[in-house]
Length: 509
Image (tube, rainbow, N blue to C red; front, side, top):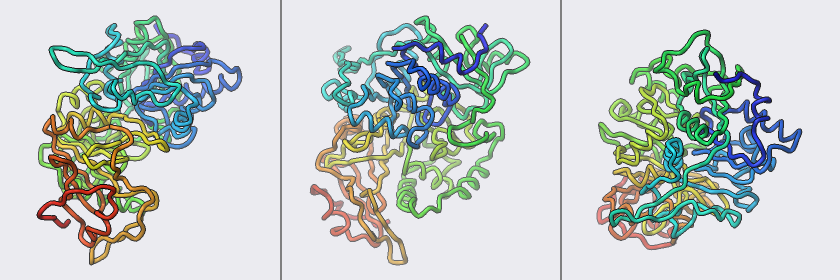
């Protein structure tokens, strides 16, 4: 049976040089209390040090130096394996400044690698990432000069080139859950999504490592077996932390996120309308969502990405499409209304929750009809950089798994960034002030999405901005639509650093 100890006692078990694996998706199921105790120990003792952190998503809370990021920024961590860095801004800058060894791999690949490690495998074989920055011919997953480990190899099977990824070797697992029953079994009934807690525990125990779980409460009786997420036999230590929150950075607990209060489709639509952003800074994103949502078809299974795509979910509700489609997020929610901001990964009124690995099984298998996802750069061929430039490290997250295997891909981005101001009146849309940074480039800095892959996979690709729409044509971008009021030459063509084909019939929206 697991031992019940304090968070301070638990982190004493982490040794110098250990590989610590977190079950974490940004602000979801984030073990803040264990992280705080780990930070306190390092401040007091200077140990544990030289840690390696493996997290299939990212640890931060979208603000500089939040509690789960501090163990990195204080200097206790030697190596990072993450899919997402944007929610850890200080860490991201440390990586760009070559201060820490760091790697960036696709979220779905990392999740599947954890599951494979649980079953004793040393690597997985995947098509995710072929001809993209993680491909060995680019080695873009090595984020700076410090980062020299070879994590990905090419392999040929039955005449087909594929990618071989290493699996993790954790010494300690840190997991947040909702409760432990009287026998020490772990459940996650209050979490909006769950991640891969069982696989993480199994992978750690397989190596003789320690599994530490923080929970809000201990139940008086055993759970029903079907409700147990991690069996007690796989848990070494339990820390009871009644002060833990449901979502990092958001006080309290919302029963809607855990499904304790069901919501009808009609209630979700009204909720979305009532919570639509009125912030002027979001105006361009709302315009993008308004046009992007027109790509939805009844019956679509959909992925909603972070940033501008978050607004597509609200727009789908506004126009009555929400009940007709299944919106999903890679964290594991199915149906309902995906949340944005700090709550990204949660969904209001979700009907089911999968583990992350199971959700990526769906995505990698072509189970998505359409996805809405952001972009940092787009080039003349239609390639997209969604994760990196020398001044901003976002991390790839689920981008590759989502965009590489989805039938219809919709990129949602402003035409420029850094001070863009637009206005709309009875005459249409007007650019008041152009942003400092154009989102279109002759060649993308890093390859997150390949137009050639899209052609080979017969994908339909659309690029939606606040002022115009491009489609992926046979030889690159084709301008197909323009917002009313926009001057095609002055506001689009003259700004692009390359020539672009213009459709014979330019549609106004």
